[in-house]
Image (cartoon, rainbow, N blue to C red; front, side):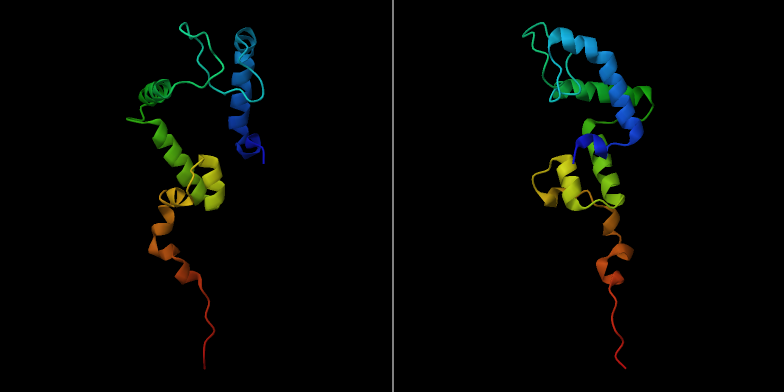
Amino acid sequence: MPFENCLPKDVKEAIDDYLKLDRKRREVQRSGGEDAYLFQPHTNDRTLTFDKPLPTRMVQKIVKRWAEYSRLGELSPHDLRRTAITRALESGLTYRQVQMMSKHRDPKTVMRYDHGRENLDQNAVNFLKYDEVG
């Protein structure tokens, strides 16, 4: 299943708009193409290599800056990842689907994010049907 089919419409439109704005830079720096990273460094004076992902530290700085700007408080990329995984599980996606989305190697890792099903009211035993013996 193509990744873009998994995105909400407004997110897909925002990514398409971003790629339109960034098209010229990608052409000049030869860092485009179907398999290109979505977010790339716009400057790299040391190696002049642009067809690579943003460094982890830069992603952390961007998330932190936008969290401060939005008055969300302390926020990290992992907080965003954790939220996406939790919301996917809460919306009814299977562990396998969420594992593929999050790229976790072990499905047990995904299960750690499943806080909603820890509620005893949602325990599977409460949904079993038994025939009455009479």
